[in-house]
Image (cartoon, rainbow, N blue to C red; front, side, top):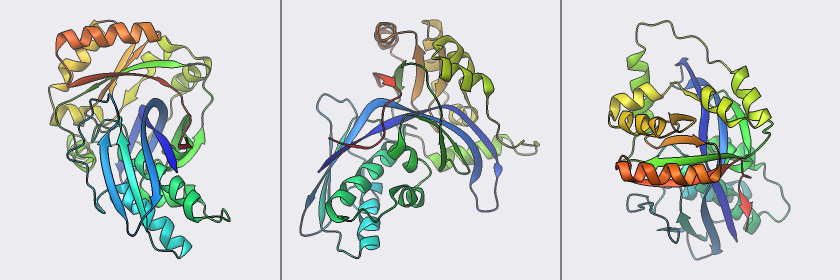
Length: 299
């Protein structure tokens, strides 16, 4: 059983003040893009994880855990526990989504593992996979849903958003990753002493998505975590500036970073922009993709 799940870019991430439980209320507009991890689940004598880069992918995978530190392993154990079976499964993960790059690759793997293990063990279709996904992490439900959606709460309460066309992207990966908790902590530090308002939606962003207007979407991109990511990894500013100077319609750090996302007018424009950025030497690798695309899907 093989399932593929997409990466995401946050076209808007509005972050409220820290809550008592340590999380933050968010208005998080997710957009699924055509970079996919694949998870193949097969019956085995015990839970085993194997991780490799997808064919042709530049994504390094040496630091991806192959034990219970992998969110896909936790997903498999959760499905097994809910069904009262042993988690006897081998999960082969093929990664094309940047690792620790702010594009929810681990969450995509978890969503794919949830669906694959449910297909293996849940013959009666008893499980609510969205509910299980929310228990695994804030980004996992969207990896199941795909498309474009606004997430509230920690990001797990999703409402699909209408999208009127296809958007073309270039993603510039960085050398080394950023820890999501560290980026949120830095965001709180940078805003310390300020009156932080509740997170807000953007009518301009929603209108741009609905109309399929790439120029309007580029102007509406926003990420409250970007100052924190730039504080922790200042070289990202050079990458963002280079993309805008080379003609990107908009640019932002994706999620908690450090991957930088650039919006292009067309697929051909994205390819040209990626080539120009490569000549500038401002990224570890450059990936072109489009969105929106579906969530976790059996292939």
